[in-house]
Length: 393
Image 1 (cartoon, rainbow, N blue to C red):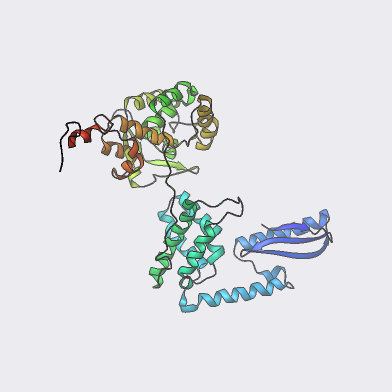
Image 2: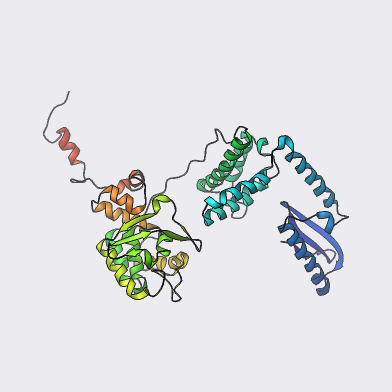
């Protein structure tokens, strides 16, 4: 955004803005007065508009500036690169690729891709021809991403770095296939991500929480603890998708970043069987919000905001009860571990959670799967005859 500033040494006003990732400062002969600032603010707005519309010509605004000639040479250089073998630059191809892919992406994913492209990929590779990027460039890019973030001073997590690399790799795979060149990502590994433990609540902790939580959120948390639904799925649940007759919840959509979207994936488009606690909670909630579209809503009938729920109910309640702080998402893990502890069929649990098979179930919750006998290894000892004193050669 173009700003009008004043130099301390001279008191003269100047423009301060970014164009094509380069910070530009253009001096004027005007003194720092209210009237002069107002005049330059009008020009600053025009500069912003032209840049936004991709119609900014430096020489039109600052014909005598050395930067005008610099950007003219730069534009000629980019144009020349674009004509090498008829291949586009990363910036040009990225715009085309995103335009082609947007109909298949969720709105939240589109925002994520835009953020990664504008924040990391384009500043580094935007002006390079797609086929000119090498494996060495990608490795250096990965190393740069892994360093401390300039804004926070903290090293970026491996998951953050990998998310950027995955999206960039996805685009480069398409470019390499379309223009018949070797994908520079071949042989480039993602960073090793730390495994994170889940922190579900025990049944006693669940009961303690439900006993003390605000009455207007009792049913909300009961549904979260006993349905295994994701945050966006609970927030986006409508009464039309609650079937009391068949005792089923139809998970058909979710609210992500304030927008109603299709479920996370096809497996998430599922039917959840209502157990008795779940049925009771929804029946009670029906009496409170049956006049509204959403099952859980504010006084105006609009869907709840997960961040507000976290900060105003979830975290304060955990603190009050002396329970360890954890993500609101742990309510989903809580449901899964309670089902496992009860000995429910793993395939049924996987279906409730929206997993396509039981692989993820055992991967995430393996340490919560109890031995179906004595849970202490004695079943194996009995099998090999340790207690019987048998001898093996």
